[in-house]
Image (tube, rainbow, N blue to C red; front, side, top):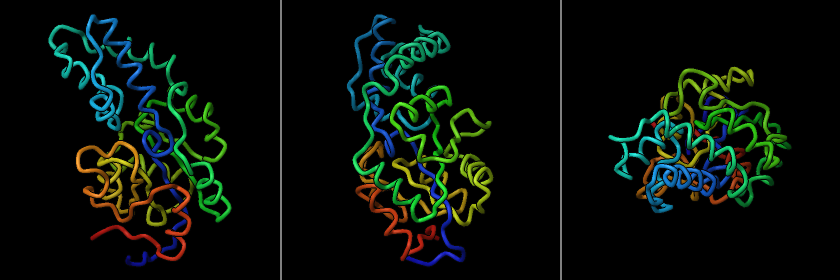
Length: 231
């Protein structure tokens, strides 16, 4: 891998599919929403495939797939989803193996840590608190913290500003095409976990600068190799 001109100082990390396997929480809420609308649940993998572009997109895709979009008001469906998600958030999903150890190692090595997610703040804050991950992170940029969400690069740049770190000194760790697109637009390297919600083809097909099996592998990857974004 090429060497960046400035050493890495900050690690920006996605939430759903990277830190926490929150698909059970999200799919559970979507299934309850559909039940309220008189529709059977969709397959788990189908709904999980909609994760990563924000709740409005997920609800819209669920309604479309369930053939409800033309007869159900999207705002009403969103209200139902949020009501159920408030119950399932952090209660069905789990922290991925190696996450806490990886975050501890990154902090010991002096990296600044931020979570950058498309999940609304009202859901991200309790999830990070319930899982104990909030204690490892300095900054949270949620899906509604600013006007833009990933794949727009501005959430990444905003996190860097809050950390008082140049974007050229940061790396993004995620699991999806949205993360790769956001990092490329921000001009920073992107590392994908091999698990998560990468979609068809898996993470290897997304053109990340590196793939890791666990967050525990990240400190060793950053220190000697100095990830650089692909040209």
